[in-house]
Image (tube, rainbow, N blue to C red; front, side, top):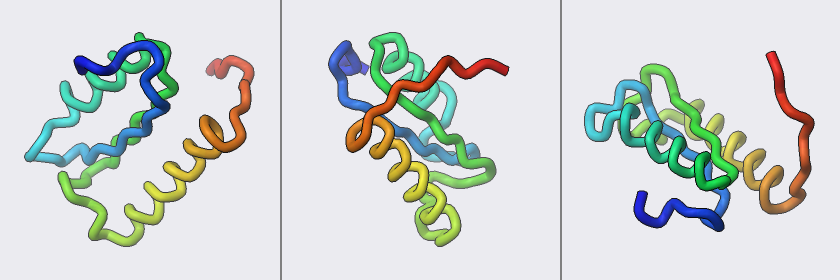
Length: 87
């Protein structure tokens, strides 16, 4: 949290909701809030039912790779400005 200040690089977080090693709340959720407040492009993907190490499950690893690629494309490779998202 100490280094999550303005100018921090774009960050994507993946966290399993069944993680018993490091709880989603407050850890990744707090980091997401701190980075957001600093103006850092940040996404948090909470993987329902996944434990701490969920990369051994091919379908989850593939999904995370897809979201990581999309994040990098949107924020580093081909930055775009999107209109505000509203529900």
